[in-house]
Length: 366
Image (cartoon, rainbow, N blue to C red; front, side, top):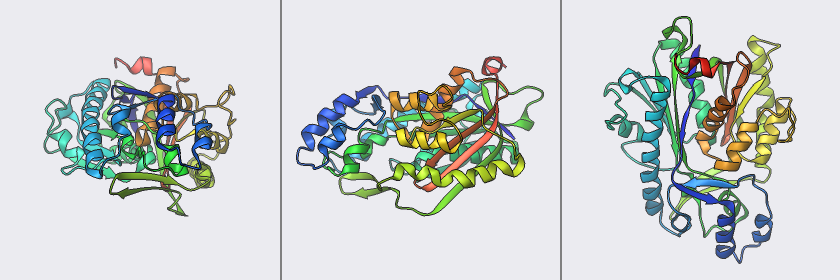
Protein backbone atom coordinates (compact mmCIF):
# COMPACT_ATOMS: atom_id res chain seq x y z
CA UNK A 1 0.00 0.00 0.00
CA UNK A 2 2.54 2.62 1.17
CA UNK A 3 5.74 3.19 3.12
CA UNK A 4 6.10 5.60 6.05
CA UNK A 5 9.53 7.01 6.82
CA UNK A 6 10.95 7.43 10.30
CA UNK A 7 9.34 10.66 11.56
CA UNK A 8 11.20 13.81 12.46
CA UNK A 9 10.08 15.27 15.79
CA UNK A 10 11.35 18.63 17.07
CA UNK A 11 10.74 20.48 20.33
CA UNK A 12 11.03 24.09 21.48
CA UNK A 13 13.86 25.11 23.76
CA UNK A 14 11.92 25.70 26.97
CA UNK A 15 11.99 22.51 29.03
CA UNK A 16 9.41 22.64 31.83
CA UNK A 17 9.28 20.19 34.72
CA UNK A 18 6.07 19.02 36.35
CA UNK A 19 7.50 20.22 39.65
CA UNK A 20 7.62 23.76 38.23
CA UNK A 21 4.03 23.51 37.01
CA UNK A 22 2.82 22.23 40.37
CA UNK A 23 4.56 25.14 42.09
CA UNK A 24 2.80 27.57 39.75
CA UNK A 25 -0.50 25.74 40.23
CA UNK A 26 -0.22 25.94 44.00
CA UNK A 27 0.29 29.70 43.76
CA UNK A 28 -2.46 30.40 41.20
CA UNK A 29 -5.15 28.01 42.48
CA UNK A 30 -5.06 28.43 46.26
CA UNK A 31 -8.84 28.74 46.45
CA UNK A 32 -9.60 25.70 44.28
CA UNK A 33 -11.29 22.79 46.08
CA UNK A 34 -9.36 20.46 43.75
CA UNK A 35 -5.88 21.76 44.53
CA UNK A 36 -4.73 19.05 46.96
CA UNK A 37 -6.18 16.34 44.77
CA UNK A 38 -4.33 17.58 41.69
CA UNK A 39 -1.07 18.14 43.56
CA UNK A 40 -1.09 14.46 44.53
CA UNK A 41 -2.03 13.09 41.11
CA UNK A 42 0.45 11.11 39.02
CA UNK A 43 -0.06 12.22 35.43
CA UNK A 44 2.88 10.19 34.15
CA UNK A 45 4.58 13.36 32.86
CA UNK A 46 7.89 14.52 34.30
CA UNK A 47 8.93 17.09 31.69
CA UNK A 48 7.64 18.72 28.54
CA UNK A 49 8.68 21.56 26.23
CA UNK A 50 6.82 24.83 25.69
CA UNK A 51 7.27 27.48 22.99
CA UNK A 52 7.79 30.11 25.72
CA UNK A 53 9.01 30.10 29.34
CA UNK A 54 6.53 29.01 32.00
CA UNK A 55 6.19 32.52 33.42
CA UNK A 56 4.97 33.64 29.98
CA UNK A 57 2.72 30.63 29.35
CA UNK A 58 1.16 30.94 32.84
CA UNK A 59 0.27 34.62 32.46
CA UNK A 60 -3.35 35.57 32.10
CA UNK A 61 -3.95 37.00 28.66
CA UNK A 62 -6.32 37.37 25.75
CA UNK A 63 -7.06 34.88 23.02
CA UNK A 64 -5.06 37.07 20.64
CA UNK A 65 -2.03 37.24 22.94
CA UNK A 66 -1.96 33.48 23.51
CA UNK A 67 -2.45 32.71 19.84
CA UNK A 68 0.38 35.08 18.84
CA UNK A 69 2.89 33.40 21.16
CA UNK A 70 1.81 29.89 20.15
CA UNK A 71 1.74 30.64 16.43
CA UNK A 72 5.28 32.04 16.29
CA UNK A 73 6.71 29.04 18.11
CA UNK A 74 4.68 26.52 16.13
CA UNK A 75 5.77 27.90 12.78
CA UNK A 76 9.45 27.65 13.65
CA UNK A 77 9.01 24.03 14.77
CA UNK A 78 6.99 23.18 11.67
CA UNK A 79 9.73 24.29 9.28
CA UNK A 80 12.38 22.37 11.19
CA UNK A 81 10.31 19.18 11.24
CA UNK A 82 9.48 19.37 7.52
CA UNK A 83 13.15 19.83 6.54
CA UNK A 84 14.28 16.99 8.81
CA UNK A 85 11.61 14.62 7.45
CA UNK A 86 12.72 15.27 3.89
CA UNK A 87 16.31 14.55 4.92
CA UNK A 88 15.24 11.25 6.55
CA UNK A 89 13.59 10.24 3.26
CA UNK A 90 16.48 11.45 1.10
CA UNK A 91 14.15 13.73 -0.87
CA UNK A 92 14.04 17.36 -1.92
CA UNK A 93 10.95 19.45 -1.36
CA UNK A 94 10.42 19.63 -5.13
CA UNK A 95 9.88 15.85 -5.19
CA UNK A 96 6.84 16.00 -2.88
CA UNK A 97 3.43 15.90 -4.59
CA UNK A 98 1.09 16.37 -1.61
CA UNK A 99 1.38 18.37 1.62
CA UNK A 100 -0.87 17.32 4.51
CA UNK A 101 -0.96 19.39 7.69
CA UNK A 102 -2.84 19.02 10.96
CA UNK A 103 -3.13 22.01 13.30
CA UNK A 104 -5.65 22.16 16.14
CA UNK A 105 -4.30 24.62 18.67
CA UNK A 106 -3.54 27.95 16.94
CA UNK A 107 -5.29 29.99 14.27
CA UNK A 108 -3.82 31.70 11.22
CA UNK A 109 -4.90 32.63 7.73
CA UNK A 110 -3.26 31.84 5.36
CA UNK A 111 -2.81 28.44 6.97
CA UNK A 112 0.29 26.49 7.86
CA UNK A 113 0.15 24.60 4.57
CA UNK A 114 0.41 27.86 2.58
CA UNK A 115 3.16 29.19 4.85
CA UNK A 116 5.25 26.04 4.33
CA UNK A 117 4.83 26.41 0.56
CA UNK A 118 6.19 29.96 0.88
CA UNK A 119 9.19 28.86 2.93
CA UNK A 120 12.23 28.54 0.62
CA UNK A 121 14.03 26.42 3.22
CA UNK A 122 11.46 23.64 2.71
CA UNK A 123 11.49 23.96 -1.08
CA UNK A 124 7.99 22.73 -1.95
CA UNK A 125 6.56 23.29 -5.43
CA UNK A 126 3.91 26.03 -5.78
CA UNK A 127 1.61 23.57 -7.58
CA UNK A 128 1.76 20.99 -4.77
CA UNK A 129 -1.59 19.46 -3.80
CA UNK A 130 -2.43 20.80 -0.32
CA UNK A 131 -4.63 19.02 2.22
CA UNK A 132 -4.85 21.09 5.43
CA UNK A 133 -6.58 19.49 8.43
CA UNK A 134 -7.98 21.15 11.54
CA UNK A 135 -9.91 20.09 14.64
CA UNK A 136 -8.43 16.59 14.81
CA UNK A 137 -6.63 16.87 18.14
CA UNK A 138 -4.85 13.80 19.45
CA UNK A 139 -6.00 11.56 16.61
CA UNK A 140 -4.28 13.81 14.03
CA UNK A 141 -1.11 11.79 13.50
CA UNK A 142 -2.86 8.46 12.94
CA UNK A 143 -5.65 10.10 10.93
CA UNK A 144 -3.19 11.67 8.49
CA UNK A 145 -1.13 8.48 8.15
CA UNK A 146 -4.31 6.51 7.42
CA UNK A 147 -5.44 9.02 4.82
CA UNK A 148 -1.99 9.47 3.28
CA UNK A 149 -1.44 5.73 2.88
CA UNK A 150 -4.65 5.34 0.90
CA UNK A 151 -3.96 8.40 -1.23
CA UNK A 152 -0.40 7.31 -1.98
CA UNK A 153 -1.58 3.84 -2.93
CA UNK A 154 -4.35 5.19 -5.20
CA UNK A 155 -2.39 7.94 -6.93
CA UNK A 156 1.31 7.08 -6.72
CA UNK A 157 2.07 10.48 -5.18
CA UNK A 158 4.65 11.24 -2.49
CA UNK A 159 3.17 12.90 0.58
CA UNK A 160 4.75 15.07 3.27
CA UNK A 161 2.74 15.11 6.52
CA UNK A 162 3.48 17.91 9.01
CA UNK A 163 1.83 18.19 12.46
CA UNK A 164 2.78 21.21 14.58
CA UNK A 165 0.91 21.86 17.83
CA UNK A 166 1.35 24.51 20.53
CA UNK A 167 -0.70 22.86 23.25
CA UNK A 168 0.71 25.26 25.82
CA UNK A 169 -1.93 27.70 24.56
CA UNK A 170 -4.54 25.86 26.65
CA UNK A 171 -2.59 26.49 29.89
CA UNK A 172 -5.10 28.66 31.76
CA UNK A 173 -3.98 29.95 35.17
CA UNK A 174 -7.46 31.33 35.95
CA UNK A 175 -9.17 28.00 35.29
CA UNK A 176 -9.18 26.30 38.69
CA UNK A 177 -11.65 23.55 37.78
CA UNK A 178 -10.47 19.96 38.09
CA UNK A 179 -9.83 19.60 34.36
CA UNK A 180 -8.28 23.07 34.20
CA UNK A 181 -5.71 22.10 36.82
CA UNK A 182 -5.14 18.64 35.43
CA UNK A 183 -4.57 19.33 31.74
CA UNK A 184 -2.00 22.06 32.33
CA UNK A 185 0.26 19.27 33.63
CA UNK A 186 -0.16 16.92 30.68
CA UNK A 187 0.32 18.78 27.40
CA UNK A 188 3.56 19.65 25.58
CA UNK A 189 4.52 21.47 22.38
CA UNK A 190 6.18 19.94 19.32
CA UNK A 191 6.15 19.54 15.56
CA UNK A 192 6.49 16.24 13.73
CA UNK A 193 6.67 15.25 10.09
CA UNK A 194 7.19 12.22 7.91
CA UNK A 195 7.04 11.19 4.26
CA UNK A 196 4.60 8.60 2.93
CA UNK A 197 5.69 6.95 -0.30
CA UNK A 198 3.58 4.66 -2.52
CA UNK A 199 4.75 1.09 -2.79
CA UNK A 200 4.48 1.27 -6.58
CA UNK A 201 7.07 4.04 -6.68
CA UNK A 202 9.90 1.73 -5.67
CA UNK A 203 11.30 -1.48 -7.09
CA UNK A 204 12.38 -4.37 -4.91
CA UNK A 205 13.27 -2.59 -1.68
CA UNK A 206 11.69 0.07 0.53
CA UNK A 207 12.82 3.67 0.06
CA UNK A 208 15.38 5.39 2.24
CA UNK A 209 14.25 5.98 5.80
CA UNK A 210 11.23 3.67 5.61
CA UNK A 211 10.29 2.06 8.93
CA UNK A 212 6.75 0.83 8.31
CA UNK A 213 5.02 -0.70 5.32
CA UNK A 214 1.35 0.21 5.69
CA UNK A 215 -0.99 -2.45 4.32
CA UNK A 216 -4.36 -1.11 5.51
CA UNK A 217 -5.86 1.86 7.35
CA UNK A 218 -8.95 2.63 9.44
CA UNK A 219 -10.92 5.56 10.85
CA UNK A 220 -13.91 5.48 13.15
CA UNK A 221 -16.32 7.84 14.94
CA UNK A 222 -17.94 6.65 18.18
CA UNK A 223 -21.32 8.36 17.97
CA UNK A 224 -22.86 9.94 21.04
CA UNK A 225 -19.53 10.86 22.67
CA UNK A 226 -18.94 14.35 21.29
CA UNK A 227 -18.64 16.05 24.69
CA UNK A 228 -16.18 13.57 26.20
CA UNK A 229 -13.26 15.84 25.26
CA UNK A 230 -13.83 19.41 24.13
CA UNK A 231 -11.77 22.46 23.19
CA UNK A 232 -13.64 25.74 23.51
CA UNK A 233 -12.64 29.35 22.88
CA UNK A 234 -13.20 32.10 25.44
CA UNK A 235 -11.96 35.67 25.71
CA UNK A 236 -8.79 34.55 27.50
CA UNK A 237 -7.99 31.77 25.03
CA UNK A 238 -8.63 28.07 24.50
CA UNK A 239 -9.94 25.83 27.27
CA UNK A 240 -9.64 22.04 27.08
CA UNK A 241 -12.17 20.07 29.13
CA UNK A 242 -13.00 16.41 29.61
CA UNK A 243 -15.76 14.44 31.28
CA UNK A 244 -15.18 12.22 34.30
CA UNK A 245 -13.92 8.83 33.13
CA UNK A 246 -12.94 10.19 29.72
CA UNK A 247 -9.71 8.21 29.82
CA UNK A 248 -11.81 5.03 29.50
CA UNK A 249 -13.26 6.22 26.20
CA UNK A 250 -10.59 4.37 24.24
CA UNK A 251 -12.44 1.17 25.14
CA UNK A 252 -15.34 2.28 22.90
CA UNK A 253 -13.04 1.58 19.97
CA UNK A 254 -12.27 -2.02 20.92
CA UNK A 255 -14.99 -3.86 19.00
CA UNK A 256 -14.88 -1.68 15.85
CA UNK A 257 -11.09 -1.94 15.78
CA UNK A 258 -11.04 -5.71 16.10
CA UNK A 259 -13.82 -6.06 13.53
CA UNK A 260 -11.66 -4.10 11.07
CA UNK A 261 -8.54 -6.11 11.85
CA UNK A 262 -10.42 -9.36 11.28
CA UNK A 263 -12.00 -8.28 7.98
CA UNK A 264 -9.12 -9.23 5.70
CA UNK A 265 -7.01 -11.38 8.02
CA UNK A 266 -9.05 -13.09 10.79
CA UNK A 267 -5.94 -14.41 12.56
CA UNK A 268 -3.92 -11.18 12.37
CA UNK A 269 -2.58 -10.01 15.73
CA UNK A 270 -0.29 -7.03 16.46
CA UNK A 271 3.24 -7.79 17.60
CA UNK A 272 4.61 -4.24 17.47
CA UNK A 273 2.28 -1.48 18.71
CA UNK A 274 2.63 2.31 18.44
CA UNK A 275 0.11 4.28 20.48
CA UNK A 276 -0.56 7.93 21.20
CA UNK A 277 0.41 8.98 24.73
CA UNK A 278 -2.87 10.49 25.87
CA UNK A 279 -2.25 9.80 29.54
CA UNK A 280 -1.59 6.89 31.92
CA UNK A 281 -5.12 5.48 31.91
CA UNK A 282 -5.46 5.88 28.14
CA UNK A 283 -2.30 3.81 27.65
CA UNK A 284 -3.42 1.15 30.13
CA UNK A 285 -6.80 0.78 28.43
CA UNK A 286 -5.19 0.76 24.99
CA UNK A 287 -2.89 -2.11 25.94
CA UNK A 288 -5.61 -4.23 27.53
CA UNK A 289 -8.08 -3.78 24.67
CA UNK A 290 -5.39 -5.12 22.34
CA UNK A 291 -4.86 -8.15 24.58
CA UNK A 292 -1.65 -7.04 26.32
CA UNK A 293 -0.87 -6.31 29.99
CA UNK A 294 -1.80 -2.76 31.00
CA UNK A 295 1.05 -2.46 33.52
CA UNK A 296 3.73 -0.29 31.85
CA UNK A 297 6.47 -2.23 33.67
CA UNK A 298 5.29 -5.63 32.45
CA UNK A 299 7.78 -7.09 29.94
CA UNK A 300 4.94 -7.89 27.52
CA UNK A 301 3.50 -4.38 27.47
CA UNK A 302 4.03 -3.18 23.86
CA UNK A 303 3.67 0.54 24.57
CA UNK A 304 7.06 1.22 26.15
CA UNK A 305 7.83 4.03 23.73
CA UNK A 306 4.46 5.70 24.29
CA UNK A 307 5.06 5.66 28.05
CA UNK A 308 8.51 7.16 27.48
CA UNK A 309 7.01 9.83 25.25
CA UNK A 310 4.43 10.70 27.90
CA UNK A 311 7.02 10.88 30.66
CA UNK A 312 9.59 12.99 28.84
CA UNK A 313 7.48 15.13 26.45
CA UNK A 314 3.88 15.02 27.69
CA UNK A 315 0.84 14.54 25.49
CA UNK A 316 1.76 16.13 22.14
CA UNK A 317 -1.71 15.96 20.62
CA UNK A 318 -1.61 14.86 16.99
CA UNK A 319 2.18 14.59 17.16
CA UNK A 320 2.11 12.11 20.03
CA UNK A 321 1.81 8.98 17.91
CA UNK A 322 4.53 10.34 15.60
CA UNK A 323 6.91 10.67 18.54
CA UNK A 324 6.06 7.12 19.64
CA UNK A 325 6.76 5.92 16.08
CA UNK A 326 10.08 7.78 16.12
CA UNK A 327 11.06 6.13 19.43
CA UNK A 328 9.91 2.72 18.18
CA UNK A 329 12.18 3.07 15.15
CA UNK A 330 15.10 3.80 17.47
CA UNK A 331 14.37 0.66 19.49
CA UNK A 332 14.56 -1.55 16.34
CA UNK A 333 11.61 -3.98 16.69
CA UNK A 334 11.88 -7.31 14.86
CA UNK A 335 11.83 -6.81 11.11
CA UNK A 336 8.70 -8.31 9.58
CA UNK A 337 6.60 -8.07 12.74
CA UNK A 338 2.89 -7.31 12.46
CA UNK A 339 2.56 -3.64 13.41
CA UNK A 340 -0.39 -1.55 14.55
CA UNK A 341 -0.33 2.24 15.02
CA UNK A 342 -3.35 3.61 16.90
CA UNK A 343 -4.60 6.95 18.22
CA UNK A 344 -7.86 8.37 19.53
CA UNK A 345 -9.12 11.93 19.74
CA UNK A 346 -12.10 14.08 20.66
CA UNK A 347 -15.28 12.84 19.13
CA UNK A 348 -14.56 10.07 20.23
CA UNK A 349 -12.62 9.33 17.04
CA UNK A 350 -10.11 6.61 16.31
CA UNK A 351 -7.61 6.06 13.52
CA UNK A 352 -5.12 3.29 12.87
CA UNK A 353 -2.82 1.79 10.31
CA UNK A 354 -1.54 -1.75 10.23
CA UNK A 355 1.35 -3.23 8.36
CA UNK A 356 4.80 -4.73 8.59
CA UNK A 357 7.77 -3.35 10.48
CA UNK A 358 10.85 -2.80 8.33
CA UNK A 359 14.56 -3.05 9.03
CA UNK A 360 15.30 0.62 9.64
CA UNK A 361 19.08 0.10 9.62
CA UNK A 362 18.91 -1.51 6.18
CA UNK A 363 16.75 1.29 4.78
CA UNK A 364 18.74 4.16 6.30
CA UNK A 365 20.94 4.58 3.25
CA UNK A 366 18.77 2.85 0.67
